[in-house]
Amino acid sequence: MAFSIASILLGSSLILQVASSALPTSSRCCNLLDAEFRGGEKVVFPQTTEYGVLNTYFAPTSQQTPSCIFSPADTFDVSRAIKLFTRHSCKFAIRSGGHHYNAGWASINNGILISLSNLNKVIYNPTSKSVFIGSGNRWRKVYDTVEPHNVTVVGAQNSDVGVGGFLVNGGVSYLADRYGWAVDNVRDFEVVVADGRVLHANKDENKDLFRALKGGSSNFGVVTGFTLDTVKSNPVTNLYVTYPESSYDVLIDEAHQYFVKEEDVDSQVLFVFSLYFKDGVASNNYAAVLVYTDVMDLTNPPKVFTPFLDGEVPSSGVYVSGANKTLGSHGHQLAGVQHSGGRTTRQTVSIFPDAQLLKQFNKIWIKTAEEYKKIEGLKVDLLFQRIGKQWIAAGNAKGGNSMGLTKPVVILWVQPHWTSARDDEAVAELTTKVITRFEKAAKDAGKLSDFEYLNYAGPKQSLMSGYGTESIRRLQSVKAMYDPKNVFGTLLPGGPKVPGLY
Ligand SMILES: Cc1cc2nc3c(=O)[nH]c(=O)nc-3n(C[C@H](O)[C@H](O)[C@H](O)COP(=O)(O)OP(=O)(O)OC[C@H]3O[C@@H](n4cnc5c(N)ncnc54)[C@H](O)[C@@H]3O)c2cc1C
Ligand SMILES: *[C@@H]1O[C@H](CO)[C@@H](O)[C@H](O)[C@H]1NC(C)=O
Ligand SMILES: *[C@@H]1O[C@H](CO)[C@@H](O)[C@H](O)[C@H]1NC(C)=O
Picture 1 (cartoon, rainbow, N blue to C red):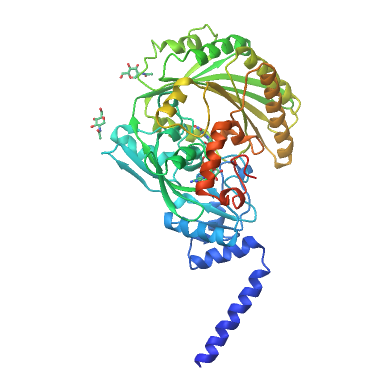
Picture 2: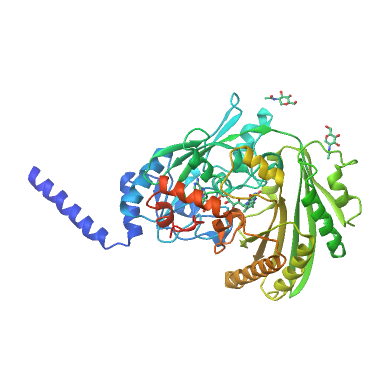
């Protein structure tokens, strides 16, 4: 009896081997992973409800078709999976909140998607004034956890955004002039590196890795948790001001003054210009978002805002989006109006502040969009803001990051929205054309910065090459220490890569 059971088992395992060697590698990897986690609910396959839920993105354009989706319950699960992936050369992608617009960054075809959404702990520590955040969280839960204690975090403007991608790629917050990039405020990273070890990276342990992870994207490991400083929670006021097209040149002159003067660290101004096309006819909307991160009296606004409010730049409307509210409440409000589900893409360019160049950009953006005006439902946004010397200095004071900025820049991003998948390629072409023309104009003016903010970058941009030689050398040496076989370069096909390793 015993003999025959053994032979049946032997026989079936042989059949299994034969069958699985005929499968594509990604399916074989999924089966191995499923077996490793004993067929539990952590590995889900296409055509199941769970798969459909986990494979939903803010922009449908960033979705792909993974062979299976793995949802680790904790850091230990991530470690086991990474060991399996390296042993069997399994391709994978890492997803936190799924808000990045680029297909193939937090999504994958023919590979395993690691979905971090169950790493969702948020623990405030009032003694150390810090908060531990599992990397699968959205900012909403972080704000909601810390703000009742009268503190906040340097987090996203929209509280629906994922924590993981936002932080590993930098993170633009309303509080950035005071505290630097959001990621500059990380005290400790908990990270699973290529050989499956769970490391902590902070100012005392794995110091090189600590700095590299600040802007290092997905090159060094799967970050499973962030311990973030909390900061004072001031009342925040947010004004939305619109301008007629005739105000454009003077608006840009005042924007330029605002960019170069850096007079008030509690202020931030974001410019949001939109072009809409209906039946091939264009209309536009020029707006500035004025954010003040301390008490502000509407009848006597801070001096830095007066040019935008008192008619030096004639405006067509001033709206109070929110007054004296926490950062979290502003974030929740924005999440309520920025809806997911529409087709969208984004590319970026950075320049050294220059008013003439911004005026030229306005013409280029309009002219290029006009060439594509027949695209159904086309709306093209152009947004820009400053990364100033206070912002950069705040990051340096906390040990510096990977992004390599030494001088203030203005980051711009072009963001089209459209209706049909049929036009995806034409829109990609439009976006690339605007950016290429911007780059040429900036280069001709001697004002082009190589920096490309990863969270606003398109899939085919130069990405980390813009971090500069010094930063790239440092990143290469950290790669040699923590990922010598370049697992996060070869088995993780998507996302920005440390240049010079391929
Ligand atoms: C509505 C909306 C509002 C936004 N507002 C802001 C804003 O205020 N400020 C700003 O700076 N940006 C903003 N963004 C851009 C946003 O920062 C990026 O889309 C960001 O990457 C989103 O993070 P995520 O976790 O959702 O990313 P995902 O799409 O899940 O991942 C993005 C990238 O990061 C990598 N990654 C994610 N998690 C990890 C991890 N734990 N370890 C290693 N690599 C990881 C992924 O592999 C992928 O390459 C906004 C985007 C949207 C759609
Ligand atoms: C937060 O501030 C409010 C108003 O100043 C105060 O009433 C409340 O007790 C504070 N809460 C904590 C947890 O400190
Ligand atoms: C915010 O509250 C203060 C009082 O604390 C008030 O003076 C100010 O006008 C308020 N700001 C706005 C924009 O409502």
